[in-house]
Amino acid sequence: MGTYLVKARYTASAYKGMVDNPHDRETAITGLVSALGISVESLYFAPSTGEAIMIIKSDPQKNAALLMIVMSSGSLTDPNITELITSADMKSAMDTGKELASRYSPANS
Image (cartoon, rainbow, N blue to C red; front, side, top):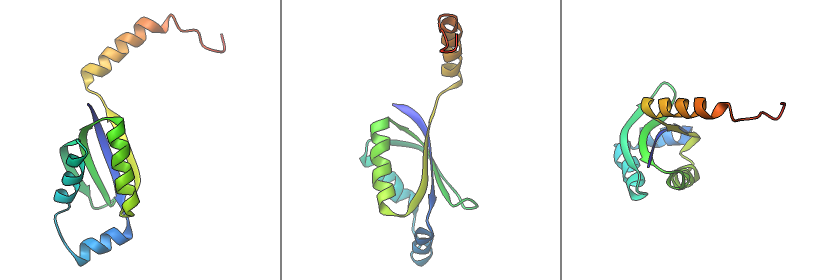
């Protein structure tokens, strides 16, 4: 499984629900993602931008299911799931790029 940064904004109606009925959103969020087989490394809230932000261990199919469920609820908008890699993995990609770049022939050549 890969590591992903997940961000989504709460809608105005979601904020209204949280004000009308204050409760721990972490329990609801981690319960849902755990049921999908996704592990949450960290969960944050950014009040100034109205976002829920997570670092998760997941895969593309589970991410798609998560988006389907959350976005169909109407409580979040502007979803963004970004794959993250370690510095060591990035260095490996650089090495591979260096090795293979000379073999690539661009379309304009």
